[in-house]
Image (cartoon, rainbow, N blue to C red; front, top):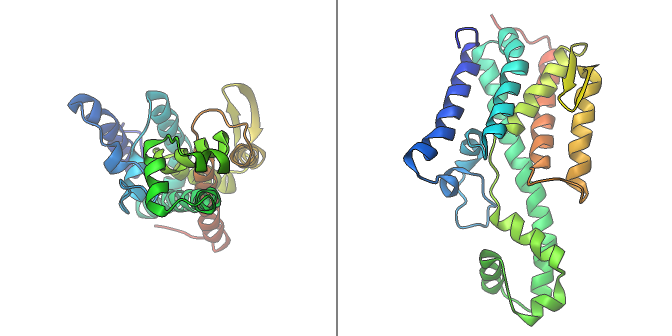
Length: 243
């Protein structure tokens, strides 16, 4: 831990504590800390920050914290602690906001199908909360696939630091574009300037198609990457220096 830069060390410690505490205390903080859809009864504005410190599995937190350390260390060394923390949270908040906006757009398109079928707001949200319905109006107005999609948007919260990590990854690519990177399932070193855009395009593809595997918040990744790129590009263009 002594080899870690200061901000990254503390971020990793907080993430690990938040991951382990619910298991040790046998408590579930998901409703309080995970990022819920704004119309969900469990939504809280603080969740745009707290969801960044929650993870769904050991593999999830392991890969995120490895990415934070591997790609964030040279950035913190270059920018300094305060600027890195500002960057990290900006990317994470941007990821959450863009993820919410995309979900809200998708939700509204499907929500209109319920309204057009003659249901009122209370009936729609009662159905979404329960996740099932025998109402003939719904059966005739929306497909099972669409129903599964809108109930997932409404009920499934987002967790993880992945959006912020994508921001860090993009910034690393901007400042260290010739660094060689590789994936476990594709162990061929590729320069960051090619590797990172391919990863982001992959998220865009999976986020806009039906080929995504698992419950991955692809647009949170894209949001973090976008905000991270804008900040890092501005700082690089203006030769941002920190003593």
